[in-house]
Amino acid sequence: MSQILNSIGYGALGIVLLIIGAVIMDLLIPYKFTREIFEEKSNATGFLVAGIFIGLAIIIRSVIVGG
Image 1 (tube, rainbow, N blue to C red):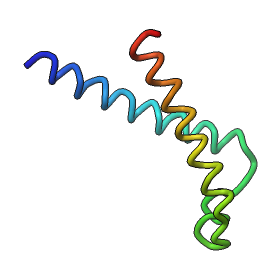
Image 2: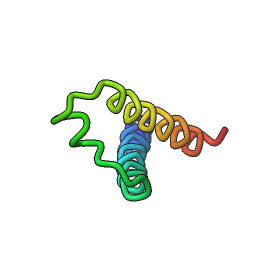
Image 3: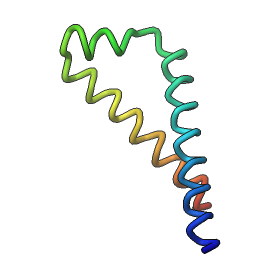
């Protein structure tokens, strides 16, 4: 039971850190991703944002696991 609670806790922590990282990246990069993705229908910008999320997720996973 404690392993399930640990998994839920680490999962929630990972999601919160991913959201915080995405907000920081959005503030640091002076570009309107939402306008390009939803109004201009730019696939390249969508791939860029997906890459940012994947990169952040890999970093967060490594920090949580410890290696």
